[in-house]
Image (cartoon, rainbow, N blue to C red):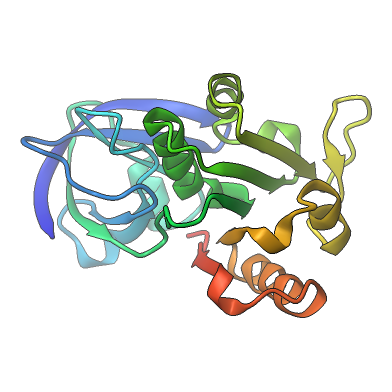
Length: 233
């Protein structure tokens, strides 16, 4: 575990309400893809949150977290920060990490829950692990898709990666699925689902619903399911 004061190197706009913050960290940056960190602003206990690390350990020289900007006090303060401002971070935490003993895995993600998925997928691509990956990623609108360009680039570089976008608002002719992730969408897009380990990440209600589908409707064992809840603050 490491705790340090870090300066913001760069801020990237991902969507109209999602930003990535890249931090300069001195020395070796040690973490596993999919883990999270604690961010504290202004050294105030009420401005402290746990956020997923969105870059991969293979992307050297910085530590990145990605946050949906909401109306919370933490989000509003975070949104005022600029490059060279300092924040305090502690890391790494969490067990939402790649199990390399599985040759096939699948992610069911919603909204900003894609952040640890991006970290793990990038690690798989950069390390060329040979892992077969399918990602079902749910959003409301196409404009809400985070890391869209990153995933398109990864798919071109790594033949064993597929990402399928599911939008709750219809987008005719755009090549996206419409609706919500359900039993039928999983069966149609991941026909070998019984051979995969599943990683679920998103709002708590979504994660619970996806877990119930996998356990009850599709008959998977809980040992094949890893979860991470995002509270959306």
